[in-house]
Image (cartoon, rainbow, N blue to C red; front, side, top):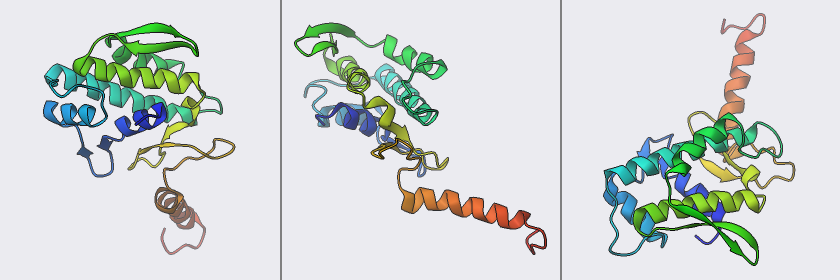
Length: 185
């Protein structure tokens, strides 16, 4: 994944809330996921501590993306920014000055370096203006991460056809049950 936003979205989506399926349930699975994206070398292997760091980073990212619905131009700052700062703080990163401006880059190899590359992708998405467009579906049973490509950045669901329909159908049924004379009371 060359695009930093795609890397962040792909990493958050390693856990499917709806099916409770985790693509990285073990150190070996984390090694395979990072290796499949070229973030670690063929001889690198994750341990239990790496897995715990990855899960903490993933869930802090999910929480931060949830807050990108809060207001237009959300930046990821505030209380949820502090939650994301904790897993980022333990990753081996440094600021590098490039012709395009300052960037974060991993200073280690192996799994810590691979996780640091994900953190660097977060910062890249923020600096290129894509961060506010990265969101998780507001449907509580879904929470799939996606890029909001709507013009006014108001998209709430990963799919209007599935999650949007579920939400609107529930709201419609709730309103119908509250109507006077409804047989559903």
